[in-house]
Image (tube, rainbow, N blue to C red; front, side, top):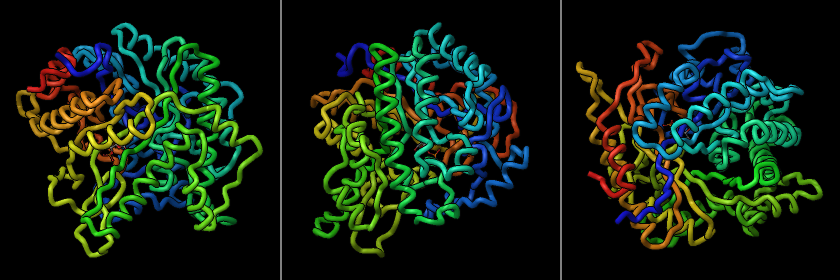
Length: 485
Ligand code: BG6
């Protein structure tokens, strides 16, 4: 008998800016993703380097229609292919699809008084298509694609103004799409503001003149927590029975050895990671987090009433991404390994993907147990997967046994956690169809069950092909996670 609930939400996860393309179609405005450049040689030892965005780079990007160098502008043209793609997801038996709404399709600069009707019509049509196939949408309001104009004008989320603008956008989404969407998420991987301030919060470092970049990061985070809490309350008021989740990059950290200094470092990393979900689930800043800010000399500007807002707008469930674990050592000379926008010490017990991310299925079980024990709210894994180079054979096949192995091993561990009593209600792998990578903007870093014929430079027919993993996942879903062969 399956260990998963009968109505377990199996599916896949996507983000508008990595798939839709059509960057200047249908009244859409420029988003921060539209100025993200192609970086095939991104130095994995300096992940933060890809965020060294400058005002000059942004201005240059705004004046060009170039799409080869800015791959997220073209995506995989999901905007025009969504009917075909959703049909393929339905063929795999998807119960759910996690997507995001591009804020700039509704509010091109983020400050329009009226929402763009073409953008609303597009998403309604997408939701209608999902409904046709009984696929439950899970919708992220902000997944690395905020209006670029707000970044340029306000230095993004550093400015309190963003709270109102976001809440207004969220309200339009609830009003227009509430009939289709029960499950919502506020910010994708909110903890990533510190790792890539521009992508997540529209912060351009050279605009931090009266304050430091560090201060900007914590201020932006505070504004996002407040905005998320207000949006959560509004969502409940406007859509009866709706559920609003918060979302975390789960970066489970191990000590490299039992040297207490290694243990201490890993504890600090884990606490830092948890602080973001603590605030959104417990509805208040953790005591140690407040002290950490003080020790760093950072004063976060809060308004009267913010504490109450956080308390009243807590998340209903916790969604998280999990790609790898990380390891910490007090010895700075240890060999390093790359991860999802982080570097850590190489764990000798784990294999790595072609991009150097260490594969750790047991770490997923550990993460599930830790999160459930800490929060006791329903959990959902909204991203898990493996970026790999795939070969399309002459007869249109992709034999991706490595991807099947990765996913199988993680789902096995998920089942173990569920057996232990963890309340897990869904799994959406990243990503069901090949798309543009966030970190490197490569197409060749493929995650999908469906291959898309497009290379890094945008050449290709965009034709979709089913990989071996497509049939494997279909079988897995139809057995509710039991048939893993
Ligand atoms: C997650 C992001 O952190 O990592 C996704 O939410 C992203 O948007 C995924 O695509 C994988 O990262 P990358 O750099 O391989 O695309």
